[in-house]
Image (cartoon, rainbow, N blue to C red):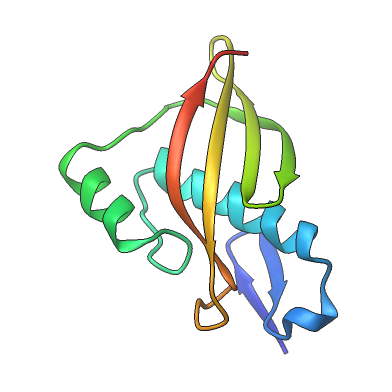
Length: 110
């Protein structure tokens, strides 16, 4: 079975998909949901959603250039007016809709 979310597909059977690809999809789609202010609770932990509802972080024109998956999250590089880098941390639970959820986002120097 495949679930389709916006511009990507994610398998619901996690054993059928490479973990790094699943992390990449969660990372990119979760970050898009933050930047577009369309917070997706399937990809973001409740605390992140709560914080972003009070204080949204949006960008008007951006392009995701590269995503590097890590053991417990990912580094995401995007171009707005300048090159920006974000470090995202995940929680991993089999009960999460896509196994991983973003639980922290930090902008770091490039």
